[in-house]
Length: 63
Image (cartoon, rainbow, N blue to C red; front, side):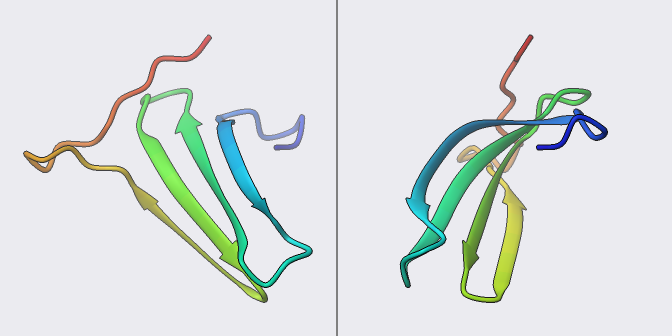
């Protein structure tokens, strides 16, 4: 994440943009605490909130 936009913090990353598998990362919104899964491969990316079994978002608190 860039210094200009510090609303989201990356808490986990795996994979590589140099391989065909792409990479996955977990991002946390510092304002709401909502955790998102971001998947990137090739020229595409997608992002979605992580949800609990009851449908509510996963909340992670970060400093």
